[in-house]
Image 1 (spheres, rainbow over the protein chains, first blue to last red):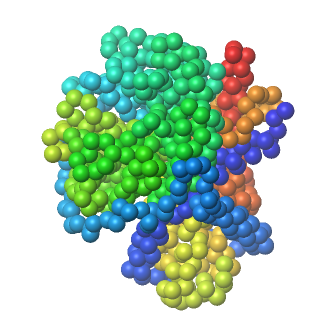
Image 2 (image 1 turned 90 degrees about the vertical axis):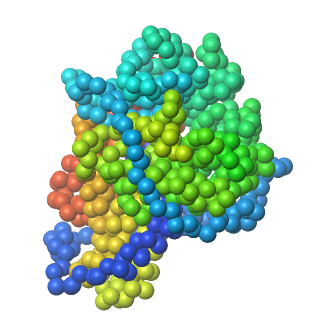
Image 3 (image 1 turned 30 degrees about the horizontal axis):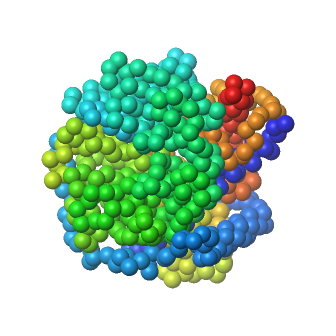
Length: 436
Length: 189
């Protein structure tokens, strides 16, 4: 029997997930900014502290003590994970500082330049519902695809639709998926086929008109999906499930045997292995059994890694590898160690375009300024910084899927701030010529 | 928190401020991230709160209330950020209509940390109003009482209790819907 306490516990458990460690740069920046700021005079005391409703200091103190105690336990646990000897024959836990390629080149003075030729697409032309979010971005040969979540103006229900945007014209076509239930997962492309999932099952969409849809029933709640030659990998609670692309039958279930940030394995195998991360540790997993074959500590910004790993290959001057979501390091997939660290800021997605590696982020020293940053493989610092006019948020809650290449454009899923003329999430395209 | 350290910082001692900021920054950041659900926005709110901590500290009347006051600062900047994004949060009211009955319905989905739970909670939480988000985090994550949460938010206790009630109901409704979906799936399997 469900009880109110059980619901509260589930909410409490969910809230426990999230950032645990404040980035050093953030604290340093705040302190520097404070040092350059004058204190207010003491003449006007803040009104709320006047004590009309006295705060229970004993209670607060015990809460604070409890929180600090819990933090200490968590910290000890995390440190235990990080520094404890790892199991497995070829596992290793090198610290980033001991990585042979961890030294970065000197910071270069790169002058940001504004992007020209930026064009936005109206994702849901004529739609009058309340816009909530765009979720994920993927590409087929001539189009990019996203999921638009809106509110039905009549019923008030949340409506989730797959949207195809023609790369040449920018024209958007919303596609209703029969059998879909609840919110669609971020789409994943496989040649000219697009996949998404919902509580109603796994949905296969022919990427060319008339966009035939086929739905395969699933016996579990699907999470993120990814496709490779073996099949469709569907992240689920406790691991991932591989499904046949033609029949929809389950080929294999792989259990997560490591601490995975969201309790599931997200993504298809990269360089022959599945990958997962949690508590700042990246794990290379056997794609058949799910057992870890290597574990390594990520750089500090990898503490909050929670999304899929991304393969980085074909970058001029940079060895191939995988990147854990939000972490500033390329992992050598064979050795299972950090191959390169880099410093381009706090990024939310990356893409390789014509042999160059680009990151999407909000500039650290210019709040609200969205930028594409090209990595200099030699110094592993920014080579080019291209900025977008206006002010933006950077959402890292949904797993990657903010960048895709289709046609002659790099497509981006962006989130303008409320100060802009249009503050709803948008898809914009940048001519690839701008990136050369 | 060390009262003497707070008083030193109030008098302009930068070293004392640094020590205070380093001590409180992690919990402010963690709280901000729970409210904002977005690292970038949480970083902005935390940074602004830490700077405000220095700037406004001389006006803190009772140094013993320093800890609660720091939560007020970070919540203030989280709410400012969220309000600037209000347009994207308008769907929230829809989820409130799901209803709160059936709390005792049996379900197969007993794993409190299930992926479906997290996804449903994430969606439902993002659709809460900014004030509701704040009080859910203060109550369920920070561990403050309703009275203490009201103090931090600067609202009457009744208002805080009402906000918490509606927010919790929305989150529970999301979980119930998820449980029902799991039960239906289980019957069909």
